[in-house]
Amino acid sequence: MFETVYAVVTEEFILIPGRTSRQGVGISEGKFESSYQEEIQSLQMAPSDMQRLDLKKGDRVRLTSEDGQIEVCIIPARTDELPAGLLFIAYGDLSSRLMGGDTHGSGMPTSKGIDVQLEVLKSA
Amino acid sequence: MIESSENSSSEEIKIIKDATCTFCGCVCDDIDLKVQGHKILEAKRACVLGNGWFLNHGVDTRPDCFIEGRPAPVEEGIERAAQILSRARYPLIYGLSDTTTEAQRVAVAIADWIGGNIDTTTSVCHGPSGMAFQGVGEVTCSLGEVRNRGDMIIFWGSNPAESHPRHFTKYSLMPKGMFLPNGRKDRTCVIVDVRKTKSARAADIFIQIKPRKDFEALWTLRALAQGIDLDPVEVEEETGNPLSLWQDLMDRMKAAKFGVIFFGMGLTMTRGKHANSEALLALTRDMNRYTRFVCKPNRGHGNVTGADNVVSWRTGYPFGVNLARGYPRFNPGEYTAADVLARGEADAAMIIASDPMANFSQPARQHLASIPYVALDPKDTPTARSAAVTFTVATYGINVPGTVYRMDDVPIPLRPAFESSHPSDLEILQGIERRVRELNRQMIRADS
Image (tube, rainbow over all chains, first blue to last red; front, side, top):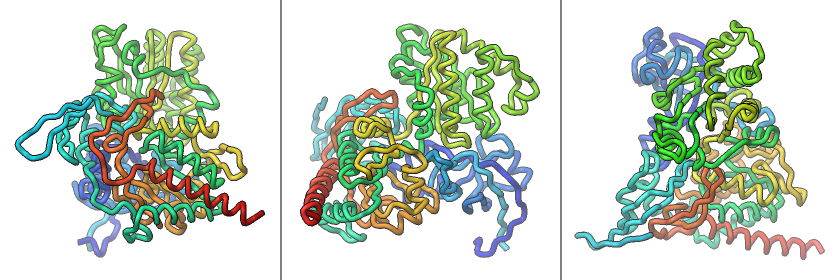
């Protein structure tokens, strides 16, 4: 249960939302199905960052950008896929909540390379 | 081509040869489908995304139409949709990348009749590249040329192993081509990305650059192409890689006979956006002083390239077009859907085959939720659920015939597997267009 949570660590990261095969298949299976929902709510982190922050798979964190805030579960990135300081999440409802409405005259909101504050959440 | 056979169950099994997969921009048209009734049992040669696409699009049992969440006859839905769009002062039509070229054509016509704004999902994928094409130009080729000639293949900010799983095997890396008899052995593959993605495993050279430093890395390569001396300390600090690595890459690029750069949304969605794409297009152009070099955006949705083509034929511009003055005006940032919604400008919308209620920024979603809009989608999505009028439509390529454009602008015909009880996008849009024109005539008569 995470009814009462408090942040134990706060750090700056760069978030890269992107396509995954599982997310792509999930679109075809249905966006309200569990496979898609699970994929878009999982945040990949470098194993070295997880170790440093004493995080294990399934721990919850809060990400805050200039434009929004989400809470997600952590999963370790494959071996050396992510360097320290970089996070990855599959495109979807949650990743889009961190984007701003301003497109800087391009039509495209800044959707990758988003500065985020990460807070590790623990139940009280 | 269709072959039939009987099996032990009562329904006949059909084999659809060379069906076209419309999940991603590769638009693979060599899929053999085993079909029984309203179900695809097997999709031979399809990738993981293609399998997901074909095996999860049976006929949806939801009603054809909902008005304010309640089932309604299609005719009533068309009437309500036409009323919403005709009465609006600043209507938006958006989406279109997952429907046929024929349906896209009618959607542009509706935008013209209602004096609205038309935009496609291109604006939030390779829209910045579309802007860059206008600024720099595009040295390009078909995927067939890549297959037969490309001996140096660079992927920049693109992860085809996850997003276009057959790209390597069908077009870019593995095929034995006319001038590459040994296939993969005759090609050099370079992947440039901020993450060591699944695609990196396929590369001969993987270059991991610093996040948000694509422009700097591309500009470094442009300078090296022209033999300009660079400060090694500054280059390493800016790009995260030593100058010697970039020099080595440039030497290999110049030595290639036919170089290809495929680029993805790692460039267009990151700070710099169209400037990043411009840098890559300019580098490609520069390389043609030394050898043959081309570039191609890896397009995501099955007919997003068709959307660019159709909107360009009909208005002269590829996306983000406003028709309110009776002639087309193009201005990304002003007439693009993400902006028109986030600024609270549109007062009605029609969303075709896309899901902005899940993928747009919060201000854009909040505004869309506050205005009456029409949604057409084969699936139940957040956008379909919140619409004033929702049409459950047949799936293009699986139920509906027509044409789509592969990512290299090559038109490909669709070979449907089975009929759907739901109407197609085209039928609904034609109905809305007819009614919008009638309403226009009535308004003109009332004014005179």
